[in-house]
Length: 56
Image (cartoon, rainbow, N blue to C red):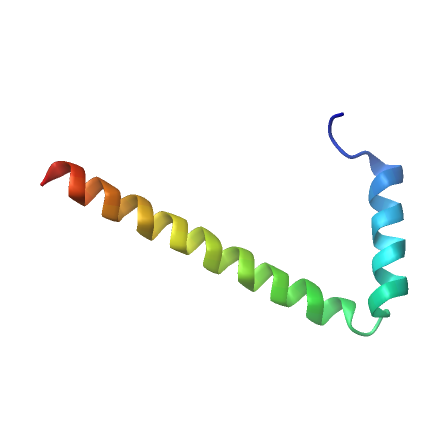
C-alpha cells in the first residue's frame, strides 16, 4: 500500500467522468479547490490561536 500511480489516477478520473459527467467536472474541481483552501485557512487560524494560548 503506497502512493497512487498513473493507472490508478486514470481510473479515478474515468469513474468521476462517468459519475458526474464531463460538464460538471470543472465546477466540481473548483469547489473542491475552494474547500481545500478554506480548510487550510482554518488550520492556520487554529494553529495561531494555539500559539497565542501557549504564550499567554
